[in-house]
Length: 502
Image (cartoon, rainbow, N blue to C red; front, side):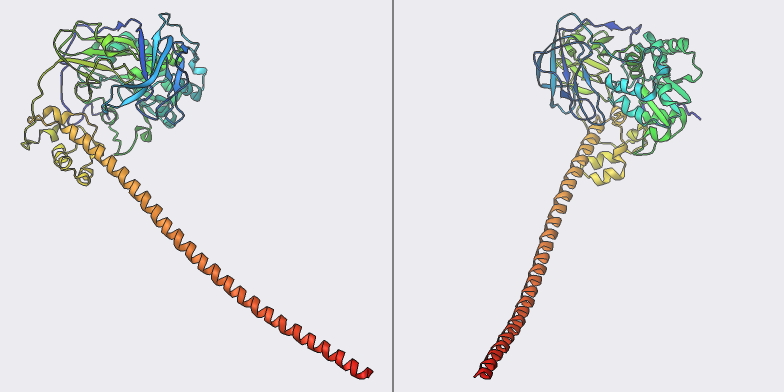
């Protein structure tokens, strides 16, 4: 039975509300920059070269690993560069990117799909179309949709996540308001693929227009809509499952293990586009918000620069801070020349302010009460600060979803989540270092064993050779004595014959 809520979390109203949620169609960009490093999996390998003309929707890079998701040209034009460029990622590292100059024609390549008669397509065929269309989780995780669907063998429940991942983000709200038919049809495609008995579309209560739009277009008895309290982080997968179904996914476990499949509502719309409209993922809706501009939602081609999208709204002339992905879990960026990626759901543009310095922890315990996972951030903080990873592990560091609720309520302005991110990275490094040490030790021990074994085998071989030589010499000596005896006997016979003839 659904509990409709969960312990912890924080209620944060949209800090930059709008009177009406709309979607602006961004003009075709003059240039796009498409990173070859997706969120999960290996870096894709380019299958075109500089100087080639590409068409919109054409595959320009792909990988061969289990998370293989191709990258498509989002405009038609000429490939001008394949080089390392900065991408919006917290690592700050550069990634190989493909730059395409637009020819202004937006000429599409012919693509494949099932069309509206998808019920006559078998499960694997549809999953292949989804994979070839480059569909990933558009809520921010970027996990390949086909990989999830391939694991959904015994799925009984679909959960469609229509909750915005963070306060201030409005792209999913806008999508559900303006594309409700496509969302419902996308859910029906997923029901056909998985064979699930039911699908639940979860929407927060502050999105009444989106709820009513979906309700109007939903005529499928297997699809239901559920409204949830507007609380951060209600959209986290495990929390959403617990809230809707009262099913707990254990630490290290997956929703698929319980027969549940979760998909973001934007990913569902992208699946509709791929299967029915035969269009790969080349654009997405992005929220542009913050206190430095008028908030808008923009449907924009992937690879378009942040700057071009931000310039579609009114921005003040002050110095700005930029953040991608959300006010809580987003990534701070230094320049607006970064490209829009599949996981770019929101860009915050705020007036530059001085960050409040962190103070000493006063042990108020507030962070413990808001943790939606039920961890003890205060204890984790002390152990992470002292780099005691073993203790962090004892306090279930790996279960932390880095939602930053603890940082948000901390009266001492301690960026708690940054300590947990650091501790996770340090744990990963120490684990990798230990694995290398173990491998080196195993190699050394095997070498020592091999040398000892070779020495023992050589000693045994030499002893056997020595023994064989002794036996051969004794045998040769015995044969020599027999030969000498035969010669003596022959000489005696000759002597006797001579004496008899005398």
